[in-house]
Length: 472
Image (tube, rainbow, N blue to C red; front, top):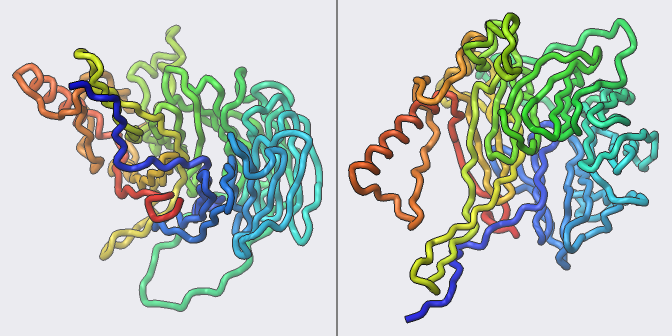
């Protein structure tokens, strides 16, 4: 009997075209071919949604800080709006309220309270958003295909970072100070006492005019990220091996971290709100976490040969700082194709690469426990509809010495974390191991897994967003 080729797909995969957090990571937006929605970041909750009567795709849905405004940009195979327009959408009234039109395609957006910056291919344009939208100023840039632009969003912050006129350079522009958010009604007093929240140290008052150009990389820039306060700037290049952190006032290199030794496409970088950590994620599917602390307070890993770097001619990576924690996002299998046309046919699986975006959130302590200091966790959103809440390793709360040896293959690591393990499957789809050889290999893999989990973030919660909650 001859069987035709079939595709087994028990659930139609969700396609997220764009996912973005607001400046405080309290909400995030998601766009699919059917429309867009606004979610609370944690606990995950659908707040608003809008489905277009006629299908049309969006490449950007950017929420404006502490307001109901969203900035929409069309794109893709069937764009909802022309790609050269930025449509201002009022989510409270569920309608368009304004639009900005340009002579070329919009590459990127960044916003803060009362300001919008649009990145085009060779220039960046700033607008003041109020009762009317006013064009304020524009700057020339290099060929900015990625639309890189970043803006500080904290109260009284002024920094705007855009691509420089030369490849790998960053322009630093200072806008009028960001206005403080409108005061809210104080909550009623209760008997429960909470520890004071640690606020990042304010940047010292400049003694001279701040720098305007930073020669960050020799290759083209891949990402551009600033702290909400505007004190630090993080850059990565198209090579994807290094993450550099700069002082935004003096232009000096503060820290340099190594993501890996092989080339990768960096998707994004996010600073922790208390400015203690920074995370980076790429097309490798791994989120890396680095400590910004220096000296004994740092927990980043370094090679055991790093003390010899000043005295011997060693490769540059020997003296690099590596991430102290990682999390590998599992790849989502799109479908399983069965083919029985030939006797030697095998089961084939098509696995989509996981593109994601990550932000930090503050979580309350467990019931019955008092927190000595705020705990921060990461929220990772995949473009296949996955929502991950990740906690740092337990050892991260007590920082280890800065010169921890970099674990080599076969070395012993720390204790087990709470991350669930994923058992590898054979080509036939079976996870049963037969024979002594396979059992031995299984033990070796289990041993290797136990050795590596000491630096693994733990998965605290996994959920779905998009059509999984009835939308889309």
